[in-house]
Length: 293
Image (cartoon, rainbow, N blue to C red; front, side, top):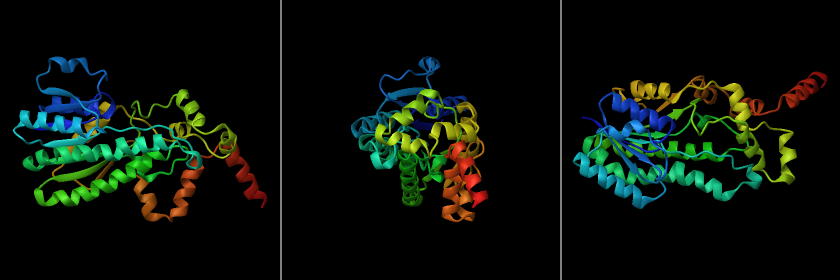
C-alpha cells in the first residue's frame, strides 16, 4: 500500500487530494491545523490518520514525521507540501510587514520545515515530493504581492531541492494551481472591502484611481474549477506520471502564462497584467487619450 503525507488537508486541494488517494487505495496521513473541521467520513476510515501540525512549528512537524515513520517503517511514497496562506497585505509603500512575513513563514519556511523532517522518509522510499506553488508566480498583482512573491521563492526552493534529491532517487516538482475554488480564492465582496482597507486611508483613494483589487480582476478574467476536479488532475497528471516534470501548471485558462514570459518582452507582460488590474473607466480614458494624441 502506497503512503502519503499531505499538509493543509482540512480544506480545498489538500482535502480533495486526500479523498482521491483514499479512493485509489493509498494510506494517507493528513496534516491539519488544530481546531480545523475535518471530513467526518475520515473518522471511520482505517486508511487515513489525521495529524494536528502547524507547518510553521518545527517541533510539531518533527513529531508528525516521527509518528508517520513509526507507522510506515520509516518510509513514505509521497510528500505533498500543500498548506498555504493568502491575504491582502496592501501596497508595498505601506505594506503590513508582519503579514508579509506571515506569508513567507507559511508558504516558504513552512514547506522547508516539512522537507527537513520528512526527507529521510522520502529518501528511504525513493518517493516523490510535490510543493504547491501557484499560477500567480507568472503574474504581477497590485495590492496582493506577498502571496505570489512567497510562492516564487518556494518554486526556486523546489528546483534546488529537486537537484539535491536526484542522486537519491527522489523526484521533486512544483505544482502551480490556477483557478481552483477554495477558501483561499473565495471571491466575495468582503474580501474586496478587506483589500482596500488594508491600504491606509491617506493612500486609498489615490490607488483606487489606478487599480482594481485582485478579487475583482481575477474573478472577471479567470474561470474556476472544483477542488475535486483539480485533485483528479493532480492524480492522473502528476502523481501517476511515469517521471515528474520540474513543474505542472494546472487549472482552467492558465497554460498560456509561461509562454507570455518566454515570447514577450518583460515590459509587455507587465503591461498585460496592468491592463487586467486597471479600472474600466481608466482604460476608457487612456484609449481616448491615445486617439487624440
